[in-house]
Image 1 (cartoon, rainbow, N blue to C red):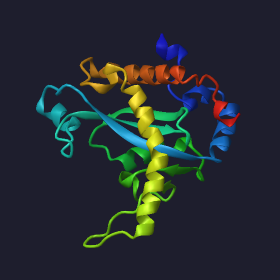
Image 2: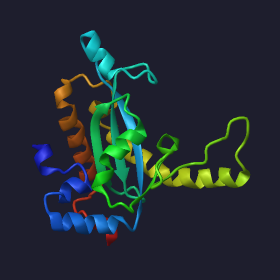
Image 3: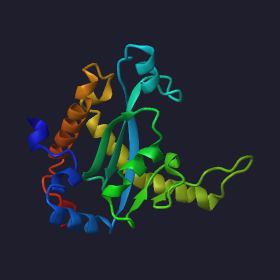
Length: 198
């Protein structure tokens, strides 16, 4: 019932109406959206092939990955992509969902998103060298803007089902996490998809 009445994101709220969707994409183009990913551990699957499919060598566990794209002021979830394999790279996941936005849409990301020209990322420390003081200052400024998406992810993790090991059946994962996102948006009083523009 929650999934039916509470859209998990602004895009989900308008994608059924092509006219509103195009207008929404146009308005978003005026902003630099913030993108980040978070992982949630699931119970270890049965069978070697299933375990191999879900296992992330980097995290040494069996996680599912969720991507959040939020407004620059952190007031609403623009788009959410949930239930991807934990071993999927952040930049790979972003490229899969890129088509939902205009080609000129700008984003702010972290070092995991380096390699995409529409995403502003922090300066990376060169091998056997240091970044300049100016670059450090720019990284700090970028981090102070990016923190908004971290706060949004934390709001979702208030719900234990979204923060602890997911113990329900995996086929219910997307529905549960999307419902949590809908509840977060309800709590933020983001019922109107253009509320940030008023």
